[in-house]
Image (tube, rainbow, N blue to C red; front, side):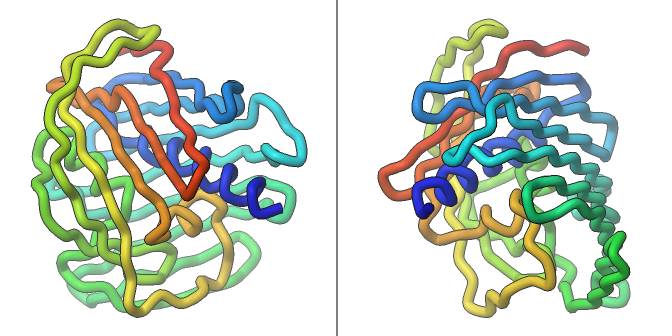
Length: 237
């Protein structure tokens, strides 16, 4: 059961990383234990991003997932709204969050009539918009404040250097970054989004590589002895 849970977290985290691309449509295959287990499609428009994640196989180790996400953000990569549709064995629900930086708060509303208002500050982002900033070449090493479904976390970014990476979509010259996460005030959210809720763990080691056009070329997530990676299959304008 623990192995299944850890693998699920790793696979879904990879889908999150895919949300950091310039205007284009990208297709990926997420791999774990030598198997292609999840398909990932990302469509990016100016200041918005749509992500689609769906299982390719389903068993006790790799449970079913069918999630979609849309994030709208400003020129400084601060989110204005996020929408999440989460479908898995335990959940089938939509989640909508609106950020109000002037009021220092965010309002989360769900399709099953749950509501939550919580405090943010002027530096608060969410993970999709943060990774977008790095893929657009505007991120720097340092610590960033993040909203994880109403729980406040910090992400520490570290530069990894350059690397030439070959994929099915071609060869890319990339820059690498790593993220580590921590929280002194984490509390259990009112719902469990199997993507974003489970990403924020001090046990995860996350690395990703992006080229100078903003294409997220490669990602790897390690949790204990388990790891998962995904490959870029195609890129279309």
